Image (cartoon, protein in one colour):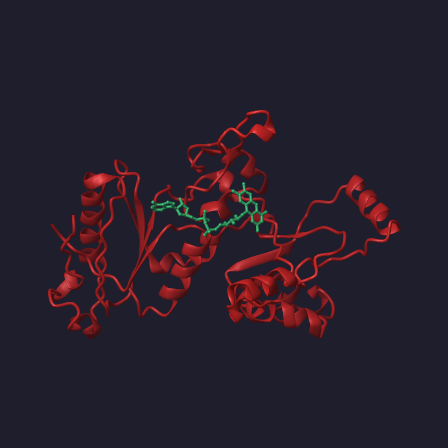
Length: 302
Ligand SMILES: Cc1cc2nc3c(=O)[nH]c(=O)nc-3n(C[C@H](O)[C@H](O)[C@H](O)COP(=O)(O)OP(=O)(O)OC[C@H]3O[C@@H](n4cnc5c(N)ncnc54)[C@H](O)[C@@H]3O)c2cc1C
């Protein structure tokens, strides 16, 4: 029996979990445990844009779900890919960066009575996690800049966040012809599908950096992370280190008692190896804290 104390425990190192882990561990103030059921993201197809075709339907990276047979599909089932690796679905997805319509967010606000869903309230969050290439300009030499940025663009887009957004490299004549035809039919050309009004025709932007796919885990600083695995459990965990201030205990049935014990014994081992010295760890909420490396006393719930 052991128990390990963290300030935050995030279950699932997918798109949202990775972002959350990055934000929570950024200050170095909190000790964050991220538990991911899938494997590490060191698989080459995760990082090559076309690789999503090889990640979907692949047990290395996909949960391999299928829908129930559907009468409307003549009884067929459909593949329903879901990412099972660090980065989650963002490691196997199509990289399209496209926000919803502003009216959808406003309607959610109306339906839920939660004003926070309003488009104008979501835009700051979009901007905070965005790293838009057009806003790189400030750090570039004048001849490399993307041209002037309108104030409307700056109000809607951010720079320096976790989510890199770039112009896609692909261009096909047939797509250009389609775009021209759409414009002839009255659909306006656009190079920005993220203004809240998605009407238009053009190439969408992508979550890539210099032609490489960029999943949610990509921005996580390796300096903040230790990596261990327990292959027999299927549970993998990354731990972002920082001083313990609050103690939490977690109980889970993930992969059964053996898996749990193994995971917690890993957490115990990691704690002993990685703990930084900190007076914060002597908080009353950590009555079992010991000095030295095992400041996060591991006593496990199993
Ligand atoms: C094939 C595909 C293409 C897509 N294309 C696009 C696109 O082009 N543009 C776009 O914007 N969106 C796209 N999406 C959707 C987008 O990627 C997802 O909506 C988004 O990534 C979901 O993020 P999430 O954090 O909610 O979940 P996920 O990213 O799925 O993260 C969940 C994580 O939790 C882990 N997990 C689950 N159960 C457990 C457990 N018991 N214990 C521990 N860990 C667990 C999973 O392994 C996974 O890593 C696509 C999705 C797919 C599948």
